[in-house]
Length: 252
Image (tube, rainbow, N blue to C red; front, side, top):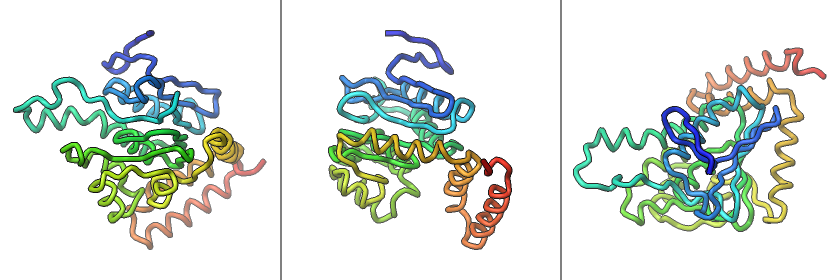
């Protein structure tokens, strides 16, 4: 398998990327392992997301095979006794950095999910701005049931689900089918598995056929406004509306 170096990590073809100038498609490519990712793969995903705006107008995250992602593959020795707290914290930065790359990307990120999305996989599926799930998709945060305190994955769901829903997802470790995941806010749309690609193609086409200033402004407002008070958010909406809609780039 081809390997190369990126930011100090050894990178393999466990993640594939393809860009046509408008759409950057990132494919998790370990189908024989449920597309579980080790820290190298997570770092590679982070780097691709961080550099996406220089290459494309939209990001699509999907997976090869039957599952989306069954979680993070922890490095050997991660559970060894007597690890100092600072060492543990530093070792988790690769995951937090990945979640931040989803939040901070100026581009919309769409996730296409079929099969299992567990732990880290559930988190990144939910982190996407739009998540289209096949009817056979299953979402779960299993950490609490494995005596792992799940606040890393919980942090990825902040702003995506209500606090009450977040508590239920974390404590219950329930396997959520696609319809229930949609009700809880993890998923944007549920579609028959045979129509997943068509559903994704439709939303990608809608975004790519729209003026890019509007595409970027919607993502920016959705990212920034929730942290504002209502008055500030409304004023920000007014300013964005005036600036973007008066731009010559909005006119054919």
